[in-house]
Amino acid sequence: MNPGLERWTALSGLLLLLASAQFFCCLGGAAPALPASLLLGAGVTWLIFRAFAPVTLWAVPLAITFTDLAAILIAELGLRPSFALWFCPLLAGGTSLATLVLLRRNQAKCTLCHRHLSRQAVVFRCPRCQNEVCDETCWSFEHRRCQLCLEQRVPVLPISDTWWQKVTGPRMMHGRCQLCLAAPETADLRACPRCRRAQCRSCWDFNNGECARCGETLPELPASLTIAMAKVASAYTTGSTPSRI
Image 1 (tube, helix red, strand yellow):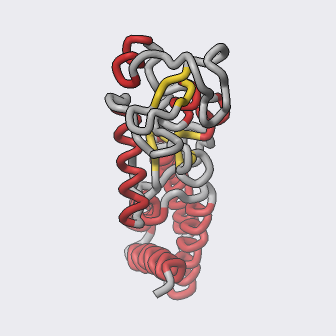
Image 2 (cartoon, one colour):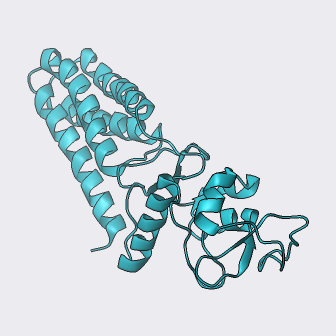
Image 3 (cartoon, rainbow, N blue to C red):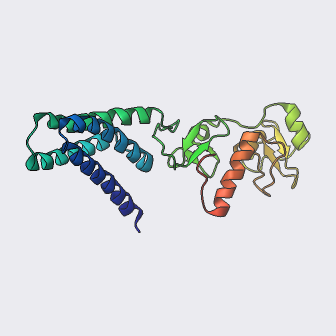
């Protein structure tokens, strides 16, 4: 079945449930109908938010208001008219709006684009800035970092010479970086532990500690980078992206 059709069917069912419940409450008069509109507005909004988030702020309250209004119209036609019942749609819509505002305040957002994220949204934690970003526009799968860190060239590898000496050995004083062609006079060249090709520290960092020629990864990478690389690789292998990294 088409996922979009399933969503609309489920949404229609919830609104029909709202209208039916409001109508039966109206049979008892305004006393049960008014409190019921408050409970139904909040309850149906919560169900819609859980099932269909993210949702537009005004769409749900408007849908609930008009659905409740339809139930009141049917009740007014079949029962003795009561002026108090006309407040039910306003109460249901107002309660729905208040509930939705509270729910959205506690909903996760993408740090960069500030888009509200559903529970099923794919979220990545950038190993460089530690921000959680969405996969749609703010995460670079190719570079395994957020778009902001990609643009700003934010480093992730340690800057300590001791760490570089430990994982790559001494600085190379001959050759050129195989990526940017920088000379040892202008860049700190380090040899790949496997193929011994030279890369400058900047290119090692940009490639997340991977050799551009043989794909060898430097040992003792930062834990945040190792976790991100492993889970992105797992997503490519299995064909399903993890919901949160």
